[in-house]
Image (cartoon, rainbow, N blue to C red):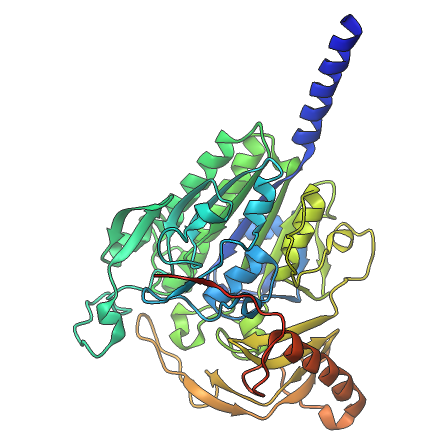
Length: 478
């Protein structure tokens, strides 16, 4: 009997130790933060000491791309590891939208929850506008924040009520605040928007303090620095870049508070902390938009300014401090990588992400990701292979051709339909996608076109009228 008791005790202890060594996961997802918006990626005129510290303590990726350069599509890809058009999701959901992420799709949250993780999201959801398509249906234990972007309300960017009934925005409801599955309040003024960074940070810190004895997944989806910009009094006027700089400095403070609670709770060593963005800057907002860091175009385009975003990752003792890599990785790769690092099951359905854990932990110097499809909506607009990028002929919005930037809360304009003739770019020598060298490299063009045809067969392409063979439907919202 005594021997049996000792064996049972040993099993309990070993199981407890196994659970305690599973790393916590924190993903901080900024909204519209451009590639060049923080000091580790070249920003000037403001101080980002906590982003700097995270870069010094971890890994900085300089060729990290999101699946599509727009809100809903990007978030679907992050959480499911799939190209969003595989899931029937494109663009940005609006209050009148009749689709949502299908509940049968497995997310990072649902996979980790099945592995004993506590899960929470604080911030912007944007994958379903009403119950039952809020985060609790997709593996999250708790949710506080917004169903969609904080500019989806009946006010213009100056904070004035829209009275022109021909403007569809005039028919949108006040901005709802959601906790779990219920609306607990509304936002009806720009002044009320100033609390977001602080309140979400406080929720995140409280969550960490409440889950020190179990592994957790925390997803902080900041609504900012997406317009309309809003900052608390404690950071107003702190930067040399006006309101935009103040907002980024407050986001830096938020990161610092989360890093501080990990230190205080002695969780730093066993926590994987990731910071990135959903897409590039909304350029025509001028000094209220971020920086693409010199990359071409911005949000809503298939160029690098739209899809390439800052990426920082820390895991003390496992990821080399101060390391930098120019290897190609995407937001879709985070799900399978996190599953590998936490020994969680992968989704039962097909995904597009690849496990990059060996590369991130420097067990290999070669990234497993070599090919990436630049879709916008259901249109295939480009393909990347290693350092080569082939832009395919398409119609796209543009900030450069026929556009103009605005100032303060007055947006400029963008050209909603610009003919792009396509071209081949060597991103190793031309990250700004300026010089078309397709005529010098016909063999590379031919090779990449084979990938384009494979993408069309698999995922479809509205430009060529190709219907993909492996598309899954979204949920239909009544």
